[in-house]
Length: 415
Image 1 (cartoon, one colour):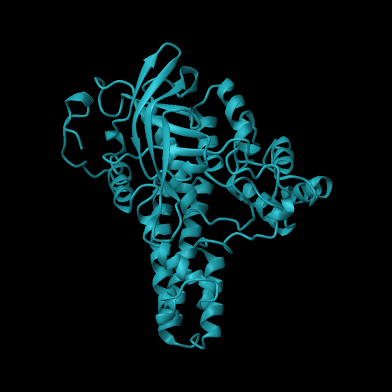
Image 2: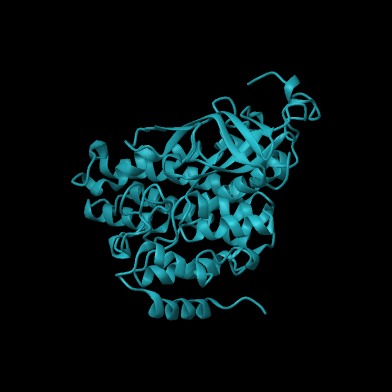
């Protein structure tokens, strides 16, 4: 059977909402209902509690839920990264163990990849995992861990064989975060928030049956996670209310009515895209600057960026003419869009762009963008890393000179 049409998906979701949505139900009950109906992550394969739908159909589900003022899937890295990675590389038992608890919000995940000496060069990581019977003992430090303070599970990449070459001695684990030996310390950025954390691992433990993708195959599995991340970060988000999952934040038992009025982008940093562009147009109109030729030119350039980014996403979804670098291109577009939205917003507000708070010009939306704009060029793989990948893997340019790829990791210079 082929894929349904967008109209058929919308009709199914509307019927589902008519039958199940109730403002008195809890967040956990609603997420479980969506999971049982395989509408929580329909782009996942059927064997991984999805439907195998493309992004267009998955977005149709979200748009329909948003139009009915329902809350959407859990936010965070479980839905975004862990579920697709486990669906691609996990065993059937691991898929059954982890993915339902991601979809229904029982677990919240973080990404334990980057280290102080292994950020852009992730394969240089030195966190060690040593076998101890049916478990692995983990020691090391991770940094820039998004959502780590609220996660009870982590996607951990650790070195399990220092005698193997740099890219072959790593293993990917699903590690419990709530245990002795895991110390999460928030890092407050200039936005005033603590999106990122540093994580210290001191004899933390993870079961051998939590190895995802096989011993020593962590680089391949991690690349799946990174590819999904870049594609997701560069995609236009469907604005829909939601909240954070997992046992630490304690939202599962709360009524959905606490969250269903909170539209995406109204609190915190708004996503860049057509919705924010329209807000900028209204802001320019309210300030009497919509007829300013410089402002009009910059708004036109912003709209062009949004459209080209959207078309890149359509090319990736369509499968024709793919280069293999669509995710990297999308990530670069997102970085550039944040920079440009920051610059245009500052031009519109002038000195008012320095005022913060809800009583500030633009209700603080432009200010949030300005404060956050440097971040996207760094997290999820820096812009420089994306360009290196495109140059080497897509354009076939030579790699930078370095040791032979078969050199054992223990023989490489640190950092």
